[in-house]
Amino acid sequence: MRIGELAERAGTTTRTLRYYESRGLLPARRAENGYRTYDEGDLRLIQQIRTLQDFGFDLEETRPFVDCLRAGHPAGDSCPASLAVYRRKLGELDALIGQLQSVRTEVGAQLARAELEASAELPGGPEPRCELGPTAPQSPVGPNWEDER
Image (cartoon, rainbow, N blue to C red):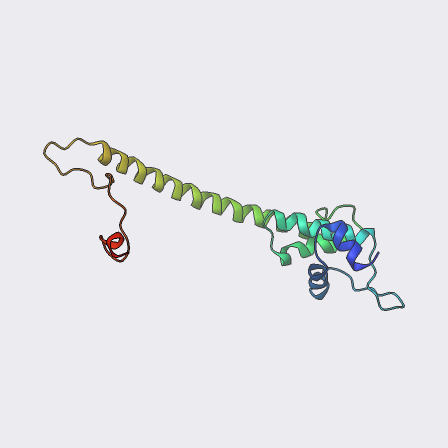
């Protein structure tokens, strides 16, 4: 198949496929007429790359999976190098989850503090300043802007 058909079947653009080719992830085979040619195996490579990128893998992290498929393995994640990338990515995700949990805890504590302060009745204390009362619309040029028409 030609590049346009591969792009359409893979749900991507010809520009993306040329980029993958320039990065060595997609083979650069050409027919006698100079057109790029691809087969079902190339479609599998693109699908593998796109799936991994959807999971948050950067393009270079997809290389071991692509190499595994190109070596003739039935799945891109059946090689030791691919498994190592999975393990490393899980470690990164676990660290991010830990950071997010810490931030969530801090935001929850700030919310609890703010709600407590907002609900506290302070006799004789100032009125809350967060409430907006009914006001007349104001112009950026001054309060009597309608009079100048």
